[in-house]
Image 1 (cartoon, rainbow, N blue to C red):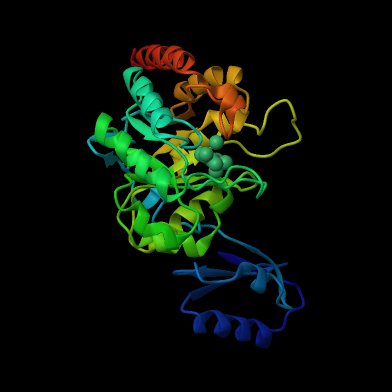
Image 2 (cartoon, rainbow, N blue to C red):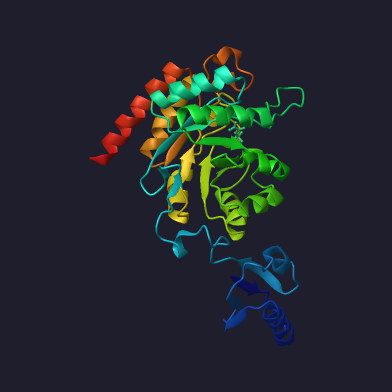
Amino acid sequence: MIAVIKSGATAQQIDGLQSWFHARGVKTHISEGDYQTIIGLVGDVSAIDTDLVEGLEIVESVKRISDPFKRANRKFHPKDTVIDVGGFKIGGGNFQIIAGPCSVESPEQILSVAKSVQKSGASLLRGGAFKPRTSPYNFQGLRAEGIDLLLEAKKVTQMPIVTEIMNAVHLPLFEEVDIIQVGARNMQNFELLKELGQCKKPILLKRGFANTLQELLMSAEYIMAEGNENVILCERGIRTFETYTRNTLDLSAVPVLRELTHLPVIIDPSHAIGVSRYVKPMALAAVACGADGLIIEVHNDPRNASCDGAQSLTPDEFDDLSADVDKIREALKV
Ligand code: PEP
Ligand code: MN
């Protein structure tokens, strides 16, 4: 980090600022130019509040040179992280498809979707039990019963299950869940992230719809700083001025995150696009740009789904998508 000092600052003021930095455990290096003095900070600057420093009377500007995320940073961990979920590996060249309904609705629904997506090549089953709905009057999910139904489907199909947590008090219900999802709306629920950092389960961390990639990485850092390094990042669309789609799928997240972090990156085209007929082209594009996996909403009867029917694929549509994903992956190998 460097702090550019305003011209006119006295030697005494600069000394005072240096002592202020030293008191926070960082060393300083002064560089005096003809027109400007710069203080370079050496050491762990992660706890330095840049806004506060910038607000100090003699400081003109502050610039971070290093990334504020450490554990998620590829610089300190060059090898890709590979997360093994019940024998299915994600990351480091290993690709998986997670598929299933937005919400678990009934034993018949979740089992029939599970069996059909498994037949079509999905290795993990998704299904929301606790649903973060914009309106409190909409279906809120089957909650604990939804998790029981997912576990039943897991027993029959052997598919590992992925479901969203909204409140840390529900953690005991997630004991047999294979991947705990943190939804877009909770990406910056830092207390929840800290609690999830205390467990060892893989966490599927979705990007908030108004969050930068650096904020996503800082949220991953919250989980990792507590000791849980098993984080899978998920781009699921960000809010823009466009209205023909539910959100805008930021596929640039894949190569950018690939460079910045060693964590696996998967794409959710369903929530990004919001329209079922646009899901396949964007899923294929996600595979082509190097995503480590996809999470796709599939429903046995999308028109009567309790949640997100418009973006849900039928089992046949998913089968078609999955076959084309294989073709893209094959083409990338040559
Ligand atoms: C979901 O996966 O069902 C969901 C609510 O996703 P997001 O948090 O991305 O909106
Ligand atoms: Mn959904």
